[in-house]
Image (cartoon, rainbow, N blue to C red; front, side, top):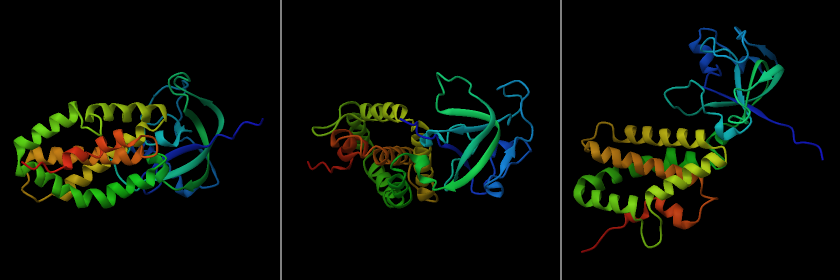
Length: 254
């Protein structure tokens, strides 16, 4: 049986320039070189050592890890995702620890593709949470905390350590998500999504008088909600309801 061709990816900011090449003062614009072979402007002489901030092209075959080690900061969206092909000699820091990575001094830029898979197999759903759901919920999460800080602190403690009748503990659910992201090669996707979610909360609560603890609580709720979206097709309700904070949403009637 013929082996399935490997697809290699590189992520860039919206202008198409590899961020590490920008930092090194030798910007490489993938958007301007679609269909072309691009030579590294200053390749390392000792393969594959970091002799400068940008010593080689870095690409990955697991699209959920594309946003790892890009140099893009702060975390932003949209990004652009490119399918590339290595040309000439290639290498790897460690085939055992980084089997999904490849390093090269020449690449062919095949085409631009949709960026959402960089946030995992359910990247579209993650973006819906980030851009539509979190802005609508952030203020309520913060208000819930400030309305009863001691009560919410106790409920958060119970959620993190004990869970509820129909959902697991928050710490356990988060650990399951981290383990699954690692095994599915979507660790970078999860970290990026969580950071996007927290940034949206900061924007939604900017200029308000909510407390620092309320902001922190809302930020955590937002991050967990994106993780639930990322793994929606992989987990059952016992884990998903914990990540969604269903027990934290429930109003306790005396």
